[in-house]
Length: 87
Image (cartoon, rainbow, N blue to C red; front, side, top):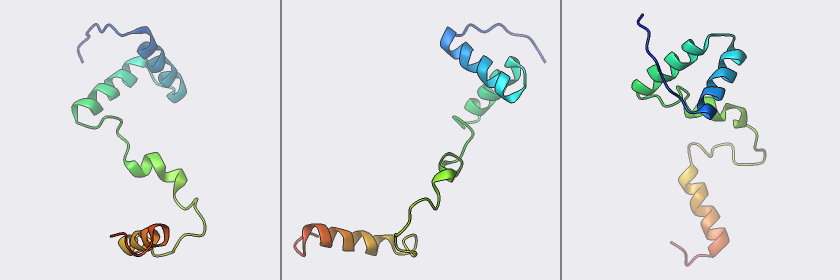
């Protein structure tokens, strides 16, 4: 590995320091990982499922087949809200 110097704004540096402490790794590793993910096109390396996993299954009372019949359920909701003239 080669050494390079990097100038960071104070708030960004503090975020990197905090993350390194939280993960128990060096600041250099946190910064290397962030740069690698960005260069690979992965802004934060997390999928939408990773971000929203804690919300999955948290709503009760909805139709059990909404993932397969979402268009039909949406259409029914519009008709209920706006009446039969809405298309």
